[in-house]
Image (cartoon, rainbow, N blue to C red; front, side):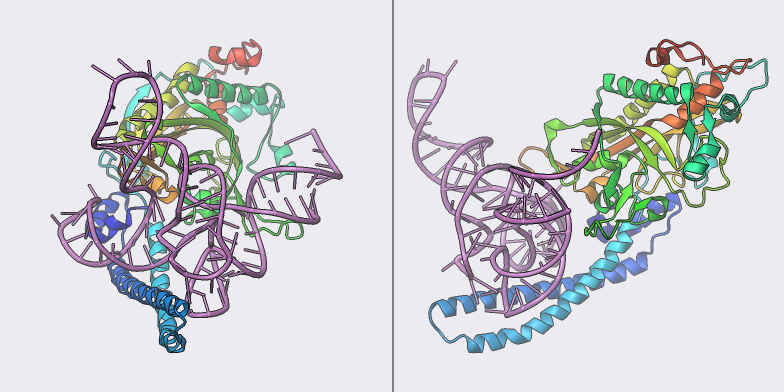
Length: 428
RNA sequence: GGAGACGUGGCCGAGAGGCUGAAGGCGCUCCCCUGCUAAGGGAGUAUAGGGUUUGUAGCUCUAUCGAGGGUUCGAAUCCCUCCGUCUCCGCCA
């Protein structure tokens, strides 16, 4: 959520900056509603003040044994006026809140202009895709025949877009997870274990709600056994539970930056994604991801994004996987992000670079909704800046390892850094 | 899951319809006193939003005593629902 004060004082500038991401702000509607808000809110507050002071008067008169009947009659007429004023005030504020909740973050000035994926800017490349003197297979062909990847079983158990991994493949996914967590811990991240189901407040805090409910799996309660009226959702990313650790918190300035890393499964309903990447492990309703989250001082968020992105790159470098770093353009960054770098790994099976990590700075956009603040000196609490990045998407990393390390005979060499996590095995 | 108790500011803890945005204590900040690794005295110390304003200053209004709703001229205080904590029982990895 953007700063309401900024929206009131400098709406035109905000509208201008949002054009960079192809978003058109309805300036006239907002201005009209703001004018109403101001009028109704002021009126309601004046009436409340009136009622409060008169009610106090009644209390004092009663204490002195005076007749309070005439005073009561006076206040009576206030009541209906106040109720009406409060109602209009609440209605306008609810409308404004809905509009404000649906406005995306303002892109950072260093975010490249452009609306299409083609407008993303390549920052650097690392590694060189290998030349294979045999016909390369994709990860499905490499694993299905050996019984390690079983789509049919997943369909039987659940439905499409889920997968069953077996044997060395399942083990390698676990090895990758362990390797990533350990590496990030060495770089100063505190490992956290968090719930996979979250409430609505958490999803609002990080910006998935209210706009993107369709992408989420909602857990409906069993009425017979659960009288709670709270719906829970499966997390689409560990960003949600981890970033919400600081919701409603006022941190000490000295506690910043906070750096967390966690591994969770992620659940995405991804309506509309059918037809893209229908084969294999690239796009699933359930996948594993290691996520880094940083909570930093507002002046440090830009350099923190570079650092965090670097931490994701280290994983790819240690695994020896060729990749490129892309700065996403205004039209391609997510709703809550001010600036985003994507890491794209080389997949020989597709002869293409594919996204394997997304690292974003949200500046104070999430923090405002989260009420995540810090106290510096004697001053008022200020909003922190939040960042996160995949470090990495484990399922896609598994695909990348399989395809980049494949041999002519269909076996796969285990990258050296992974061997300690796989009992020293050198090939699978 | 069953029964009972409870949820107040950074922390502890009073308050049981009006004089309570909230006593008292601890902690913290500032000032004074004191020459010694201590103590004493004084002041201050929640958050959000609105209005005013060149102003993240000041003034002022509103809201907030787990959350939401209700009763009332008036609710931390009464009623309802939910969330959470603790104790005992049950169940379970």
